[in-house]
Image 1 (spheres, rainbow, N blue to C red):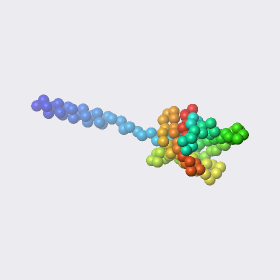
Image 2 (cartoon, helix red, strand yellow):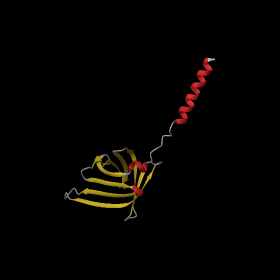
Image 3 (tube, helix red, strand yellow):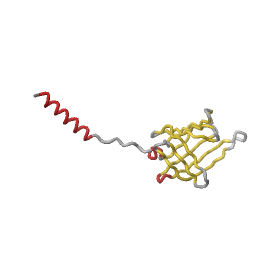
Image 4 (spheres, rainbow, N blue to C red):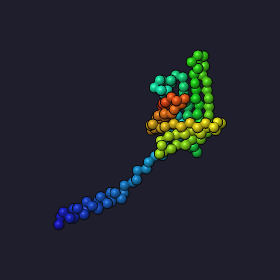
Length: 138
């Protein structure tokens, strides 16, 4: 008789435990990427070009973005600064980020290879070259 009682008590304990478990919610990519990001590393076809390119990206609420790209000219040493704004789409299924520019008919897609609270790694093809950008959250 003891075994059926113990089994029943264990069964009830299991049922109550499972009933009280909270569903683990998956964090949406859009929520993970929101914030102010600054590049710490830029590679083009495995060549470190961090000294020549820098990215300052703000991904804001309502899917808006602001991007500043600084490019250093190898010959003159001068820095060219370009700023763009627009909207972005964070695709959970594809793990990608698409920037839709306001001032141009250009869209730029990035594969989100990694993202956490302090770092994000993006990859994209630019002029046929694989570009990897590591961004740190500010």
